[in-house]
Image 1 (cartoon, rainbow, N blue to C red):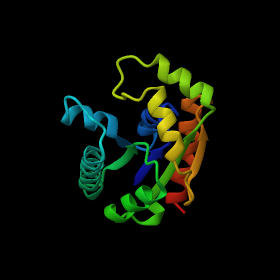
Image 2: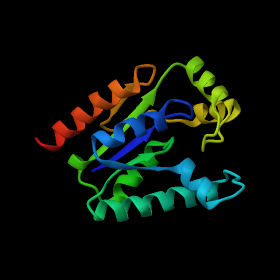
Image 3: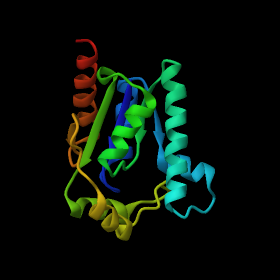
Image 4: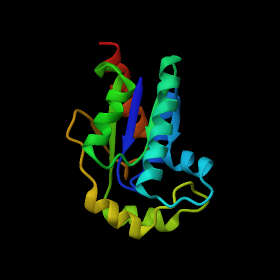
Length: 167
């Protein structure tokens, strides 16, 4: 199975993905981590962003084809990019899930300001820019409120995912 965890910077994507991972036996692929592993001084330009997403998709395809479940942890700020990933991976609908992380702006800003030793370089200014261009998920998806306990959210979502796969 393939799970996209998307949302604005600071919305709790990575924390949620890490909690969800063991309950669905999945590997987390994070654009923030991939970027830091590949590029010493990221510029976050369009070409660099395309490279990072392409690498993540390549890794995800390889793992999926090997029978390994994946969680893709990235902003995926446009509906088109979320649909494109599904097409590129060739994942059947019943094995493809989109989870959108949401929470109030004041909590996002607080989380961003408190980050330490994190792969993400997103600051409040980056959040504000992303907020202007972020397109809420329109396709079938699960929305979670990341102000709630990440473990409880992971349990709820894993149950929904596993139940829908076994139907």
